[in-house]
Structure formats: structure tokens, C-alpha cells
Length: 325
Image 1: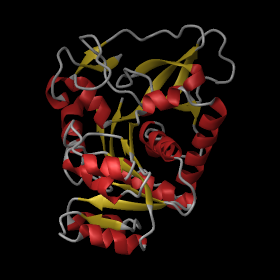
Image 2: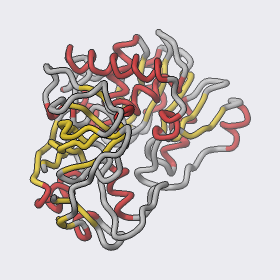
Image 3: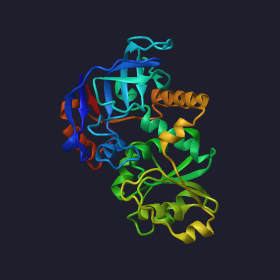
């Protein structure tokens, strides 16, 4: 079978290449999937680069999320059937024609859900809805996030609105405000305006902002913290611009703020099965009724992975880049 392998750590468009690998066999409690589509996530590229929390042995497989069709059942698997569409978000090595996955962690995909949406259902959407739960906010509350025009930012705004949570979004330039408004996402402020904090106060009507999400790092972390009310919580979700959070000690002290991290993989591992099932059900419903949109920027054959990675890394991209095997 074809698989994307990297012999060294580095930029994905330089080190990834197609190699022939044996077709894997499912063990007890596992199934083999024929991969249909697999998205490119930032954490996949960071893993290839060798800078993520998980560092595989070389030469290494790649990719983590996929839509697949059940191809073979391991011993003891009775709730799935050959030919069934399923999604997986935590199977390392997903950038291959065939993968083996634990049956218990697979999500059956309803017939009405398009392949392009199902292929990106788990990692980012599920992390986002889990993040919203992690924030422990209620209907009518205000939260703030930076990178509002990123994939997670768009989804958090949409899921928050669907639950009645007010989401204030920060972007770095005025063009980002117009881009999001064109997609029906409001409450966006560009931080390149000198009075952006005053704009935030007017937009919220002075209501307390109880939680903030930082996906950028650097001084942007402090920008989010500066808007929080007393007793607010700042959650580190990503570090797109800097691995260091620059926050004012005065804000932490006098706001009595809490700063904590969110790593989806760890949160999901400890999540109650009933909660997990409920959240996936909500996601499928939201995608089905259009409340949550999962746009696609492009679909590439796995052999063209370098072009796919370059598109994934391009500024202003809207939607995920998908690989076809």
C-alpha cells in the first residue's frame, strides 16, 4: 500500500514522500480501514517537524485523522461491519491507503454527511466543542478568543452562537473582520486599530468576559488576558506565533485570573463515554443543519503532498486541505 513517510524531521513539503508499506492486519478489538480522505492539521505538520508533544521514531508515518471504510474486522468486533463509513481522529499513520484502528474509538458516519465533512469531523470540531465544554460557560456569558479567523476560531464562534454563548473574536487586521462577517460571524474586532479595547467594551456593553482562548502566543496572549473580568480564565490552546505567552503579572494578580492549558488529546482521553457520545451527536447535528460549517480549501492526491502542504500553510486559507489515497 501507499503511505506518506518521512525519514527525517523537517518541513513536511520537503521530507514527506510516498513509500510502499505492507497492508496492516487488525488484531483483537481492531478494524482495518481503507482511507478515503485525510485532512492536514497543524499538529500533523508540527509532528513531521519534530516540534509537537508527540515525537515518533524515524522513519515515521504521518497524519492522525481520516474518513475510512471498514475493510476487515478483528476478533471480537461486533458493532461495526465491512463497508461501513467511519471517522477516526486519533490514529497515528492516517496518511496511508490502509490503517488499523481501535474499533471502540471509531465514529460511525451517517449516510447524509458528505465525505469532505466527515473526514474532518473529529480532530478540530471535536476539540473545539470539547474546549467549549472545558471553558464551563453558560448561555449569555461572554468569552474572547484570538485567531478568530482560524479553523478553530470559526468553529468556536459558530458552536458558541448555537449554544447562546457570546464569542468576541480578535483578528490582527481589518480585512479579517470583513472575511468573517461574509461568513455570518459577528462580534469581531481587529487589533490593528488603536482603540480596539474600547471597541470591545462597546460591543459587549460592558458585560464581564469570563474566559479567553489564546491560540497565538506572544503578546497576543496578554491582549486576551487584558479583556478578562475579575476571576476570569485564560486558556492556552495553541502557539501559532510564539511558544512563549507574554502576560502582565498585574493582570494575573489583580484580576485573580486563572491560566491553564488545553490539549485535546488529553482531555478527550479522560472524558466520560456518555459525554463523548453526546458531543459527537451534537457535532453531527450542527454540521447536518448548517449551523457548523466545515469548508474545504482543496483536495490533493497523496502523491502531491508537497503542493497540499504549501496550500495548507498559505495565509488567508479558508477550509481544510484534504489528502486522497
